[in-house]
Length: 409
Ligand SMILES: *Cc1c(COP(=O)(O)O)cnc(C)c1O
View (tube, rainbow, N blue to C red):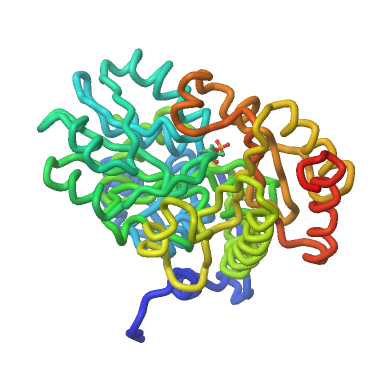
């Protein structure tokens, strides 16, 4: 079944399985604990070995669960990594992955242009409680990354593929090269760009997700995932010192079942988000507005994303519109909501369009001067473009809101 090219949708397709009852959907396994025929086998499994007298080696659902593991195999397949551990939230994925990697005295380089919660964790908890030193770097500037790297001390490097919320894109292959030469682990948050970019194929060692967003797309489950080598995922689940096992952010099997179901439509959803976002971004730009969208030829990292992007998935569903002031952005957001262009709400990747003023909401953890430095204007409105309704009627509403707010004539 070798093919001449790789497509994450095909990898996902080939990882889907039937239920034990031959149902077209796999069975849900909601049990918290699992039976053994032989106490000796239980001891073997606790020490990381396979059981001898039975096929299944599940112990307890905080460690592993068949339904959660099945979701893990699907995400690992589409990310082209050996393994994946689904967890209870994106923040659990990020914190457990980072905590597992560092030791006291390690140096870490992160991007200031990241999800507000990740920034707050790294700045306010990680450094303080783990004895690491943290530096921020602009990952779109390779010289800066090279300068900040401390030979043999920099343990890990962290950034987002398409960075929240200004949509900057760093060259993963170039940074992976810098990391490899130094034995540094590269961790990438791919929440904004599932299927669009496969970071592991460009040298990322660990890929983390908030499955709450595009991956699920239904906005009914908070969840996360950590993808990487089998060794690394095993270490997270180790009963003695694994952060997922011991901090305990377990994904519920019912949520795992639903998210796995959502993955069936991920390829068509991502294409639909990208198609509509690209059309709107181009039109907004033609109206003379300041719009950040990596699919625009004028975006400073358009070529970088084109080079690492998988064919046919576009440039994502996220648009950032800079309206200058916080007051203008808020007033415009109110108008968009009232006209039913979308919903004034945080989060992203939902079927309907969601929007929020980043500086005063999801990035409010980042101090004002840092926001300014990363290009986050207080007038920035972040939109996750949905695919519901009629595209032209929705566009008319967007245009009407712009007119009513005197943002265009
Ligand atoms: C939402 C988000 C997170 C956090 O995920 P939760 O599921 O809310 O914990 C992390 N990174 C990015 C890029 C996000 O958008």
